[in-house]
Image (cartoon, rainbow, N blue to C red; front, side, top):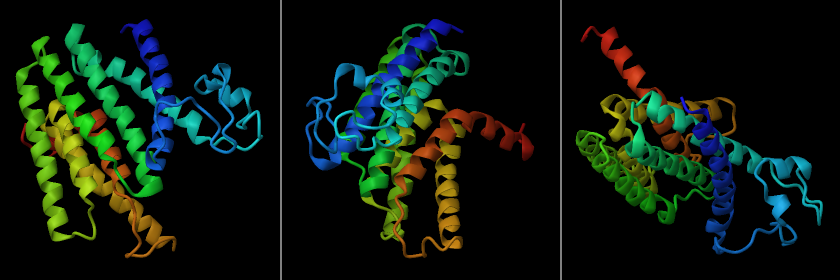
Amino acid sequence: MNVLLIAFAGLLGLAVGSFVNVIAYRLPAGISLLGPSQCPSCAAPVRAWQNIPVLSWLLLRGRCQTCQNVIGVQYPIIEAVTGAAFAMLAWFVPEVLGLGGAAGVLVWAAFSWFAAASLALTLIDLGTFTLPNRIVLPTYAVGLVLLAAACFAGAPWSDLVRALVGVVAMFASYWLIRLVRPDGMGGGDVKLAGMAGLFLGWLGWGPLAVGWLAAFLLGGGWGVALIASGKATRSTAVPFGPWLLAGAWVGVLFGQWIGQAYVGLIGLT
């Protein structure tokens, strides 16, 4: 385990997490992603020392220095989670997947992109009930290019074939669900499912199956909890994208072990 590389990945993730917050705020509002950072309340420019991930929020005590309006705790949380995800993947790829060298770096980059996209899409879907193509479609392309490059660098080509099968399987299954229950599944969820299938399929059939099932278990469980608590009814619209992505990450991190445990439980090994 290379601690320095993991630490570097974590620091990079903190910086990317800061940009994830920018995307989640600006993209739905139609604001350019390239403009300088500014306070969403008073539009005061954010100085360099005020833009350090996590640390600046703590130093400013969660408030804009100019207008003193509260800066949501979402900002440091997303930065910290992205940093932790990048660092965890820097351990996961060589230690669990057994990939090192250029292939390992490329797979790490692909899954790190997926992690950042997952967080941005979750925030946007929770706030606007949309899953922008400007995030989903590039993630298909970037993931495919990086994973294909990893195969040229030494990763098994069978992984890429399985990833493509994962795209088709996830997309088709969600499309069928939308066909049967158009009120219960949005078109954005169908495209998002194919995106998740690319990364789950790369990891194996177990992660793909677990990721597919976990999304419905998590989303269904949350819906039942809302109804039981009186905070929603059966007709209340609830964004499914965050649960689809949460389920996908259950598949990424635990799918192989859950799949093996299930196969052992039913006596197929």
